[in-house]
Image (cartoon, helix red, strand yellow):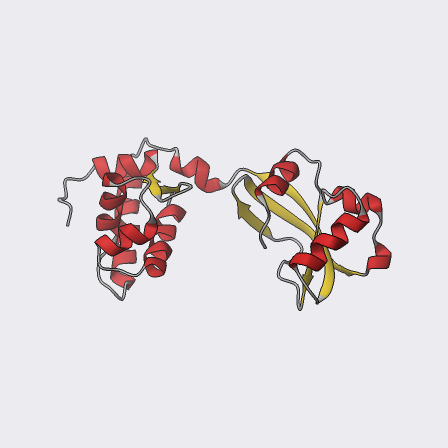
Length: 197
């Protein structure tokens, strides 16, 4: 479930508490969490509704000036399907943000990170990639994913999937264009003496 940046900002400040989508089936589940650019959103309810269930007030809670504005937007971008009302709120910071700022890595944490990277490499269908990717991002921050992938002879989408795995460990950060190592990733890389391959 995607949100515009402007809607995320208003969810964060509490001025938007509802979202509406037209779906063939629900793509969000009550009680679930969704990581976004502003933090983790809580999806409190997901319920089918009709236009008759809505009002200018519910439209305002979704960030629209009126019900007419809401319906115009839904018809323009979502087409047909069942109309769903989703109650949403900011639940807290993205835990990866906190994790990536943790640059003080003790021996146990370093050993665990080395083991996690080794497991990622062992499961890879294209061979070891973790250290090479970390070093490449360190050398070329802010470079487009396609260009980084190409420099390794890889396809862009599988490369991006691998970088997301590093992001889950708090080692990389996404930029508007490309990536950079997080403080945690920098600390890990500084702890090893392994040449770039």
